[in-house]
Length: 442
Image (cartoon, rainbow, N blue to C red):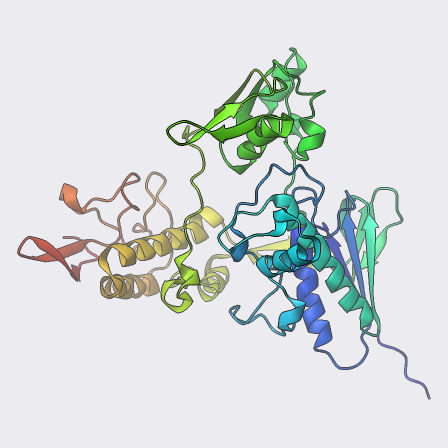
């Protein structure tokens, strides 16, 4: 008597960009570690058909945009430094971006790939590497007996829970039934007419000669010279990384040049094709700071912070004690309120790391010991409506107090909000790293 083949496991990924590439890597590593055939179907949906790089990290985007990380900090696969990653690909199968660029430079001689670990790569270079790695992982998966990978250029418009399985509805294609769906859509754009913050801008543009662009990407489509003409004024809502992309695209991307200036620095030589002005504004009025040097790369064991309060175990405890049962499709789970249940742990973790940096590990351990004891006895922790601290709630003994002296206060401008009161001992007027902690007050 013949045995019926096992049912095939059907997976669907919605979004084919960088996050999908990382997912494909994990699947490729797990499948490669499995002996014998499998029954696995993988379906990847992407509206743009850009599999591996996606739209924002497109390999075909303008060459003026930079990645927001140095090349030595980017990889495409898990390695031995990742706790609980599971099976790993061999070192040759998982090049870092730096290794990929060096190999490509040897092959092509293109100076765009001639990068050192501390250099900032162009984003299109990252896109090329993502496409290459995605194709590599796809080939590895399809080389395993019983595994198929289908790439679908389509936009998923609905996911219907049918109890035993999920049904994906997409434009221009038959519905697809799968067992699991992973949403990796990355950067998304909302309809400005349905977004409270953007609606007034959208309505103003509809009633005037102005044009409202809800998303800058892809730059070449939304900010072309025919749509943003020379002589116009351009306003950028926000002063982060996207604004840098916009500024460079509308200046260097249109033939302008930044040249060394007398006395140092750079001067801009316009091409005449730029907008009349580019006005950038945000709540702080400040551009995003450059990403700092990552000391963890020097000594991961010393510098990497592991959560003491904000842990998976703590969130699981909160789900059991405070979570509200909700039904999602046919599944029931306990839902937490982020502001009331989770955010206090985020703040407590920030306090702990701040005071560990300020006072030293011994002082932070003492603070954590007292806080943990109070937390263990507390029925609930909530965030104050006006201050980011842990306060008394229904008899909770863990109440943050603000030291009476001005020197002891830490506010929004010079550190996190108050932790349980710390009375510092001094020697010769100099604060030591020893402290006395009184959770009840000074």
